Length: 186
Image (cartoon, rainbow, N blue to C red):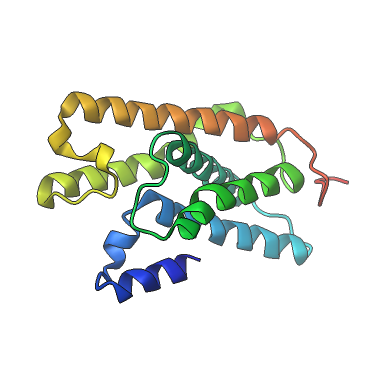
């Protein structure tokens, strides 16, 4: 799906992978898919995923839940992608990773003291995007435009981080479920 969307960008004359993966949705979908495939392959091979990989998968699920929430609540229908691509990336993919997290019990409960790990990926992404916005005016999402003022930007960033922490708390809470497939220790 990301390949299809990138192909559409190339056909439109915008082949910049930096711009394409400047979108948090695209970058996070690629990272989450990689983590999901890796943990799935390990499980199918009879191996246990290391805790760091499980935590990274939890971060991916968290970020995609936040992507789905922000898109569907705050900015539905925006963007240049065809509607089916937007629906897939902002509805279907977050639901798939959530279903995987709920149903596949291949992990231990995540310690609450580690909830902070949901923040570095989006904070680094935000810092890069905002620096680029100041430097050349390009930001992937209109609500991050520096020209909207510092107060608007600060409120949006705070809201995004709050949404991430809320999504992370849900993922951490769900990690306590046993799952119905590949139960750890079963």
